[in-house]
Length: 468
Image 1 (cartoon, rainbow, N blue to C red):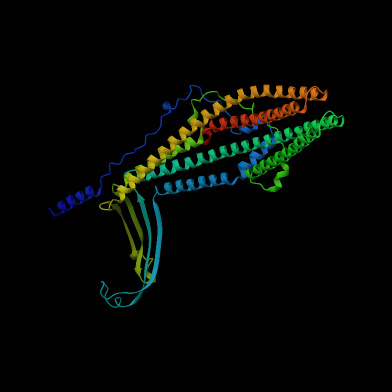
Image 2: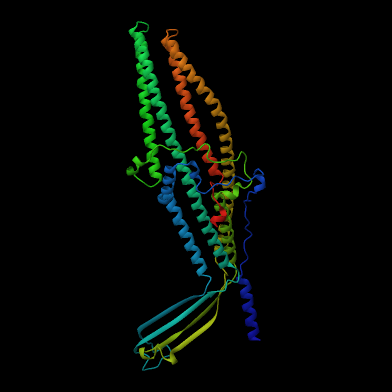
């Protein structure tokens, strides 16, 4: 009767120890692909080293340096190693843990603790050497959930590194385009100096002939001086772009002389889609990383839920215990034991409920971050598609304007030389041509930059199958 009553009480204690989980449920719904308006066709495939399509050996060399030495990328790779270490730690806890503990102490043995003289009341060496085994049986799947969480976290870190590599290559390409534009503006500024020197010489000739006044001569001199200022500005912009590229590749001032004029043909090197591709979300490492963090948060929530149930471990110990050094390792000093160890969450002042609510909030946060990444990905791609199409049309019209401005300046110079018109029409035509040249250079650079942006928004050659 007594034994039966004791077992019944133990069973009731076990059931009461299983604190019920709070009714906390996720509040944020994950965005579905069907709601994004993606097109029916997949995006064209790019090589992961997409910049090699530009056929610029200098760009190939500099990008390789950037991917090898850039501090931001090295930080991302360090986060991968940290996440992999966390995964190894979680896996290790799923296996039996064995430890060895030993001690030998000089103790004064009590007369009142079961020992009679001569041992009681004497100083003796008391030794204890035991091997301990502790193995979590993981009945409720907590350890498995923690392993899956660590695995997903490591996957997210790896995808973050892929996104960092992509962003770094894209940042280099944009800076390289800025360097190319600086060289084009320098060419335009030098050409403007030549043209305005011609205007000054022509005006000087007409002043000498009495066909023009000194005011026109001073106007021509002022415009020439302004053109020379533009040359210095263009040289400064070029040098700043060189400095930025050197910093991206992890180099200092010693690298500046080796960075020369780009030879890339960025506007025609890569095939690009004209609509949102169907596989957009599966091609972007940042979106995939956000999705992996949802998986990690879900498994973290599962692990927090498992804390509401009893934790049962298998424990065992074997070793020696003895009084006196000479008898510590004798057969009579052998001790051993094995059995289950049970932890029951009975009262914790709401700690487990708070942990579960926090895990649910982490899941909501991960889903919200994913939804934000998805919306950003769609917007970036749509914006780049619109920009590429618009800039293509603008360049056609700008080329017409440039051709007309060039012809207008030649006609105005000829009429001024022949005395058929004054200086003002010629200066106006020259100013229009300068503006047309600068706008064409800017449009070409912007078109290059937007094509790179579109390529990056499509994943930049990232292959999730090779990354997994």
